[in-house]
Amino acid sequence: MALELVWDELNRPQWETLFTAAGPSSLLQSWAWGEAKAQEGWRPRRALLRDGDQAVAIAQILEKRIGGLGRVARLNRGPLWLVSPTDAQVRTALRLIGRDWRWWRLGALFLAPEIAADHAEMLDGLSLRKRNAPAWCSAWLDLAVGSEPLRKALDGKWRNMLNGAQKAGLTAEIGSDPQMLEWLLSRYEELMQNKAFTGTPPTLIRQLAKHGRQADDLLVLRAHAPDGEAVGGILVARHGAAATYLVGWNGDAGRKLKANNFLLWQAVLALGERNVRWFDLGGIDDVLTPGIAAFKRGMKGREYRLVGEFLRF
Image 1 (tube, one colour):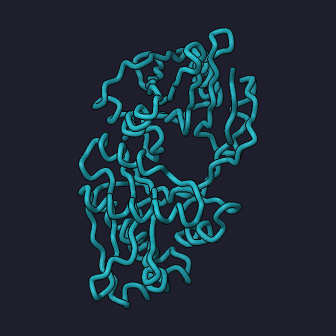
Image 2 (tube, one colour):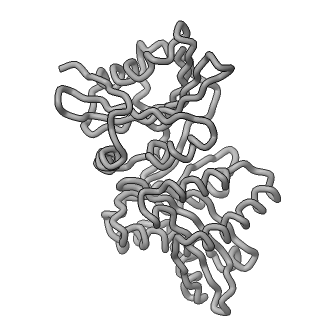
Image 3 (cartoon, one colour):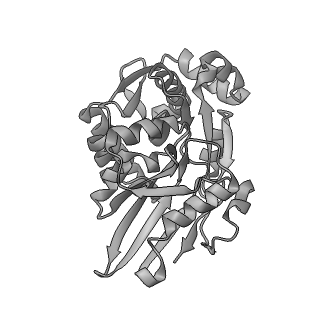
């Protein structure tokens, strides 16, 4: 049967059920992300793709009006498939999603689909213009493997640093209360200013906390030295069956004590205890942050690179 697209038919519980069923999903396709971006003037549009009575994919598109007449929309990291699609189904889905934003309707669609770089042929025939933007790259950890095999798989140097942090007596505090979040965000904001880099905006993170499905969808992990001093912190976001590393901060003592290794490993354990299956390491960029890229690769996740960003109008 032919694919059918319906807009904005799903309520949040229905969306969350399908979103979880999609497996290793992106935070950018979560209901909470759409609601958080609505505070920046974007309108979340949520699509359900069906084949007869069977739901086969979902996609969240963010739309904004420009100048009162034109409309611009963004599809990031979707659609999320509930079946193994054929190339033809992927092309059909993207055509159906894009038809509301054509130039004669005063619309344009920017799309960075959830398609691996080595499957770019799925986009053949869609009349897309590739943008000069770096393709997203990251890595997944499958937490269902279990903590012992995951630890054995770590790069030897990375594992030695983790061992050293644990022997040094670091302890982890894990929570989701506003005080812990603000403690981390204040240090993260200072870090962005001092290092002159752009990360996930703290205002957006606060909105994510506000619109989470569960109170602990945003988890703060804080490392304490033996004397009780807080020496590092990271933030991970849970979404569906997955979670994503969002931000991190280290003090001078934390860098010496390898708090980042310790905290990321504690995140693996904490997420597994919360029945999270997939952990995305939050981006690997060899150009802008080569040191961080090498650090994340030390966890030996399954690395992936997406096809890139395109414009359809």
